[in-house]
Length: 210
Image 1: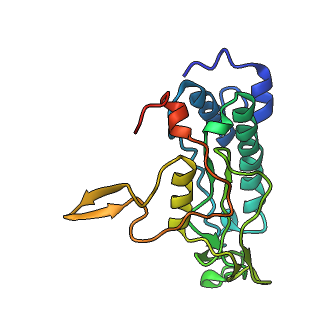
Image 2 (image 1 turned 120 degrees about the vertical axis):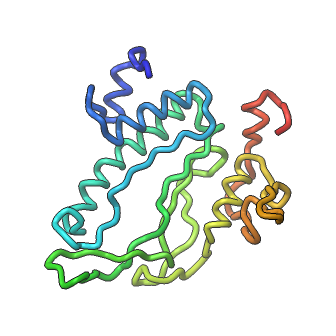
């Protein structure tokens, strides 16, 4: 990919270093790709599975390093999209597949500290595409273990993202093994505390129906 025309200010924004592979470099490339029109660029970043089985996944040291890697680049991507005039027609979804327990995990009597997989409560943030910035929906109990208010299922998240894209998740199905499946399977509700969607697909396709 030719990024020679990208200004030095963009590299400064993301924190990229020439010739070095990093999450910041990947985010930088994706920002440039969005400018060319792809609909679904993804930015994978592994290394969050901190069980404390060794020094590399000790929660005392590993999360600060990986958070430093992702925080600047993720914020830069949202800012970059806004400056390019693309944020209103782009939905940014940032998250993982589950959270981590609020209590420590002593796996196999390791001397290092870890935390186990925790599907009960975790955080995902959205930006762009009609999402009002600066709002928080949902909360956990005082331990961070169970959901205390406004629970959102993963299918609710999917329904909401589709809603932001101008799609009704209840009306789009695909056939698999003899049964019609909705895009959110058999459940899922739009999170109504978010604002109404922009008509993203109409904007992207010049008014053509999809």
